[in-house]
Length: 260
Image (cartoon, rainbow, N blue to C red; front, side, top):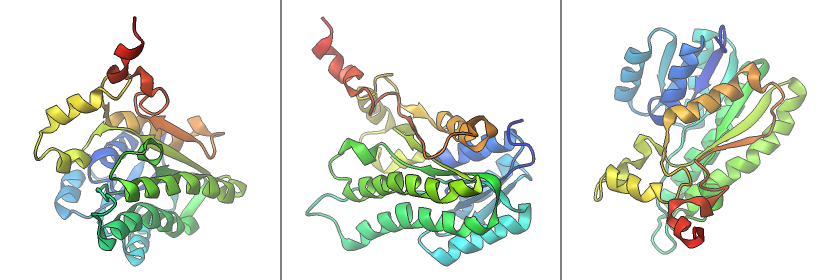
């Protein structure tokens, strides 16, 4: 097992990418503490994943809550080997139709919450620990209507490199996963009118592999970055998006323009 005897702290681990990662980490021998806002989904995760999971309700817009969650994790499992700052929220913030509260909540959760998660964990990290930040392809895609979300993830992208430099002297590695469209609950608000099948069909046309990803495909990359398999990987960004950002013209929507 790749993570035998290791301890991990995952924010937003009660659903989607975080939950899939917690499940895989436990299967690979780790003890995992997760945070989430919903007590219901935290309870479901605890029941599904067993005694090596600690589920902590916490609001990551509150720095004191982040610090409390880290303290609870350390008290239960000991010092940390892995931190996956995964939690984040999406939301549309079009110019001309966005409140200050909406904009600030996205930034506070995705950017400020990520920074203070790492800061809260910093005194409790074992030598050789791995810190993983969760980015998004929105940082580079220019998707209309998502200024706050894209800005928050672009800032995380920059922060990954700064933190990598800060932690490297301690032998602690900082890297980033950048997911594209994946089958997770983050899409639920967008499926009210059109349904997930219709939305997925549309998204598939923008991805060279012709399909959206699975949460487990992101989790396997998190496992690579958390384990000794990536012992010399520092300040890297691994994009898991089926080629949507690296080779967009290979997507089905564009193939008719170059296939003869």
